[in-house]
Length: 392
Image 1 (cartoon, rainbow, N blue to C red):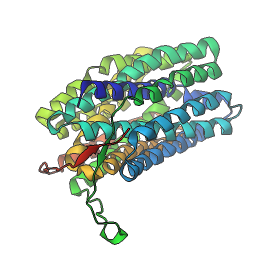
Image 2 (cartoon, rainbow, N blue to C red; image 1 turned 120 degrees about the vertical axis):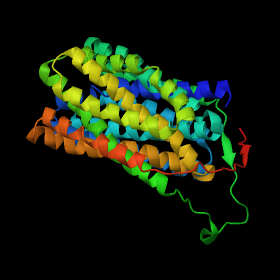
Image 3 (cartoon, rainbow, N blue to C red; image 1 turned 90 degrees about the vertical axis):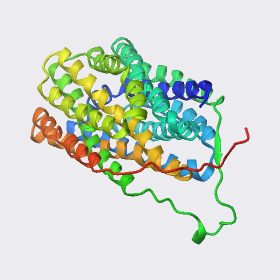
Image 4 (cartoon, one colour; image 1 turned 180 degrees about the horizontal axis):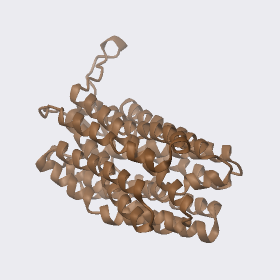
């Protein structure tokens, strides 16, 4: 992949993750301010992440069907600007929930298509490096968003913060204009439904999906649990978003390092390390009392998120390029689907069992994922790609 293409995709992803990571610690708190209970907030976030999962999977289908990934990113990016502005204009819980669901749906489309383009242009021996560079957008976005979003809320309030983020999001469609697209040629003379080639993902891919689904439940529970705990202790918005900053700073080199190592040591080992970090973060969150405790937990939490980056590289190893759009979207869809489960269950469990106890219980889930990943046995397939540049 050319350096220009990689940088353009990186900056597009950076905008998305700066907005997502910067606002995530405050979304549950703002929902509470608009009149939601803890349980309602959990259901609201679950619905938003369900929209994100739908957008992610829908993007994969559109990618393979239309093969107009560049245009789709531009359109979804433009609509994202409007939905962010609408979040700031919401005057009650239901308006905010609808606007946030639209935002997450569009986020899912854009970030998935960026990863699909990266997979299509990356050579076999550089996939870990390419997805490692893209993965850097997550901690860098956490740093940029965390440093700015909380301060904007404390100084100007939520509506102004969302308006500023909408303005910043203009960068996404503007940078995508210069991105190259690629068309994957399908087999000719197979126009009927009966003769179309159907995707066959294989046992290893299915096991990876199940493992990721189980582990990432802790991501949703951890996000909302950290926010509720810090809110109950009495931390200000700037302090809450500082967890994203510190977590991003500490984990900053890991996406690139783990991506490169996965090219040499294999994806499985690196995914296992990330899953273990998720489990450790939940234990730390459950025991946290001071701000620096939450900082340490967030560092391990962000390292756990890199499993999505290394896992996407693993998917490109396992899935034929003709079905790469659907393969990547299904894998990343598991990330958001697991968040739906974690958020929906967490809101109820927190009210009835307690936040700390619930997070300690959820820390066992990564162990199940590790066992499943260890069971994967697969030889790297040879992949033939017939591609031609898509006309601009």
